[in-house]
Image: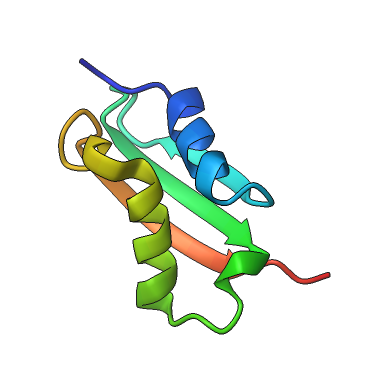
Length: 78
């Protein structure tokens, strides 16, 4: 069962409310996505920690219903 882009965004926003999120369905199959997440919460965190924050927000969906996610994170500037 594929996952809609809206659901991915909702899960990320629940953990990172200030996030600006751009999601692209790479294969048109609702299983392979690219996401760029920008949040002030990433300030002072390594890239690995930033990615972990996003993956934690997705919980058990990642690797299950959500097959693949190419992730890019950035720190939100004021």
